[in-house]
Every structure is written in structure tokens, then in C-alpha cells.
Amino acid sequence: METTNTVQLTLEMPYLKAALALLVVVLAVLATELADRRPVFTAIIQRTILIYAVVDLKCTSLGDHDYTKLIKLKRYLLGKTPYGVPIFDCQATGTIALTYDDGPYEYTIQLLDILKAAGAKATFFITHVTHNTQSIKLLNVIGGSNLAKGPIDDETLPWANIIRRMYREGHQIAAHTWTHPDLQFLSESDRRNEMYRLELALSSLLGVIPTYMRPPYSSCEDACLATMKALGYRVIYYNLDTDDFDHTLPDQIHDSIVIATQGIEAVDVRRGSILSIAHDIHPLTVSNLTVAMLESIRRNGFKTVTVGECLGDAESHWYRKV
Image (spheres, rainbow, N blue to C red):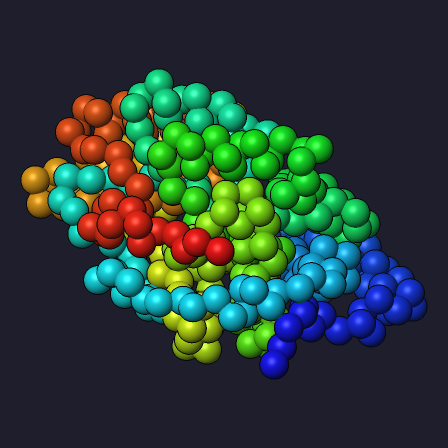
């Protein structure tokens, strides 16, 4: 029986890691040179950089952890909300489930303050990526990513207390993997390890692990869905994409505000509901987009709820005790 993380030790070989770093540098230069003339090719290069960066992360971030308790955990499929199938829509009419991916980050405290002042609840799809690899530092420069924030369960960093505050204030905590890989590229064992490592961190902070997850890049097909069902996860997507990830600059964020507010106004509050996605790793998502969305929600008569609430799932089914 598998009892520990099975990351290949060969990835620790210095020559392989040096070659990996060199390849990332070359791809970074290509992405920069071609950024204006070939945006599609640039996107492909940046995605390739991310794949290689995640491989590097597995050497330094997942490490050797004992997952025996998590592997042996009885993962009963409680409640009527289905497990291991893509969920795009809420069930409770008149509700909007605000969701935020990739946090916590330095702007999340401000977001929690804004939500508290508005009496609003949200769902946070939590991830972690380490900060000790050159490839990740390069990726941050190229893509404006949050990948350098450090371990979410490191008590010397702010993330642990932010997660505790989310939980304490009634927001829903959900999983977004540990190193934010495309799960379609991973083996069954590595998919499980991505979830186990995040569970290990969250259980140390909260004493529970989530039963809701969102796959990075919205990429989770049959084999991945089977893994998530076996681990007892609801797989959550969305029906309103604010596209804030592509509108991070002051002269761009208005586009996401228009997308979000028009999306809210297009739904009849008496018959419909909304499940939105945004990212609390971007400052203007917090200070501009969220504020505009909350005003539109109030104006159109919607109620902000967690994903679990919008699906009619009892709060006792959102987490498992470990």
C-alpha cells in the first residue's frame, strides 16, 4: 500500500534540475521576444513553462510526507450533491456563489474585510506553491503569477491565519491542489499526492479537510474525475467567468466589471442563480471588481452564499474530520 509521497527521487538529480532551469530560461526568452507578434504561441510557451515549473516544484515542495492517515481515511459520500462529476450551476434560486481561486495572497485580507462589511459569504479554492525555485521566480516575472507565496501551513507567513479567518467568518474552504498543475498531465499517484499534500496542510490548520475542489485550468476529465470521486470531492466549475485573470491592469479591470455585472443582470433572480469565478491574487479583483459585483448583487436582489449553500448541501458535508 502506498504510504508516502511517490515523487520520483530522480528529479532531485542536480544535472536534471540544471537542464530544467536552462529550458525554462530559454522558453522565457522566447515568450518575451514573441509576446507582441504571436500571442497564441506565447500562451503555449507560458503553459509549457508552467508544466516544467510544476515538475521542479515536486522536487522541493511536496517532499517526503507521510500520507498514511489520509490514505486510510474513510471518505463517505454524504449528501445529495454528486461527487466526481463536473458541477457548473447552483441549485438555489436567487443566490450567487462568489468563488476565488489561487489564494490566499496579500490582497485576501482586504477581500475578507470587504465581504464582512457587505455581510457576504464566499468560497475560497486554496492552493500553495513554494517560493524556493528559480523557475517559479521566472514564471512570476513572465506571467504575474502568485506562485512564490510560500507554504500555506508555515506559521511564520500570513497565510495560515488568513485561512483560519476565512473559516471562522463562515466562508467555505475548498481545494485547488498543492502546486496548481494541470491534473490531466499527472498520473493517478501524483493526482492523489497533490490532494493529500493540501489536505495535510489544511488539516493541520483547521482539523478538517474539504469535500469540494476546483481543478486548475478547469481541466479534469474522466480519469481525474474518477480520482476526485475516490477521494470524496465535488468538482466545482462556474457559469460566470469574470475573466479577471486577463484584466489585471487599471485600464483593463473595467472589462471584467462589465462582464460580471452584465452577467448578474442577465439572470432573473426569481428563477436563476450564479456561480462565479475570480482570483484573489490580483489587487484590482479585490478593490474594484468585487466591490462592483457586490453592488450589482445588491441592486438585483441576489443573496451571496457559499458554493455548498447554493447547491443545497448541508454545512456538515462541506468538510471531513481528520
